[in-house]
Length: 157
Image (cartoon, rainbow, N blue to C red; front, side, top):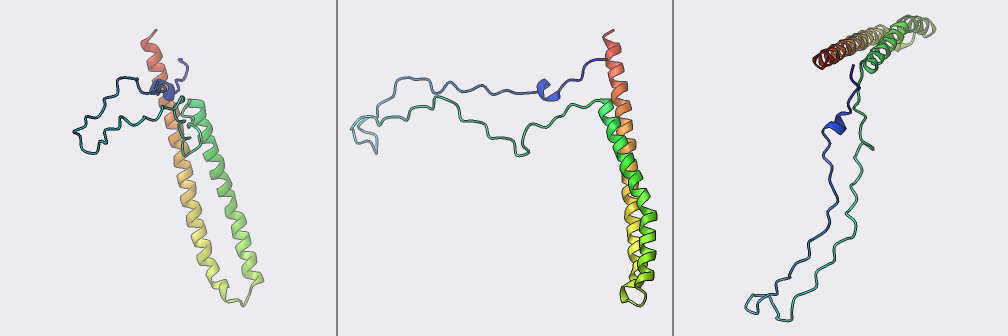
């Protein structure tokens, strides 16, 4: 397989420092031009010896755009780990809800605990589904990356 190519280097447009204005003859204003006082040309400001510095990117430094299939698979593993952690909170949340309902018997908010638990479970299901889909997408991207690398390498062998 070929080495990964940094896309920033492949498509980078580098700006070279400007050498400054090219000295040339300065036309003197003719006495007939409006606004000329006939006292000769006014001096021009001298160019800066160094070009002005380029301001830093708003996000700090250039982003690292290098991607490999192992990087994508690690992201899939991290999504699955996060999904599993969220799945494990369901039992703990049920226990906490039951314990709170028993401890707060007679309080007015106890009736809303079922609604709160339903919202929590719906949110957990949604987040877990999204994380599982993200993990699958990362794995599909890694497989496609490997397939593309194999096809490209086979064209040169």
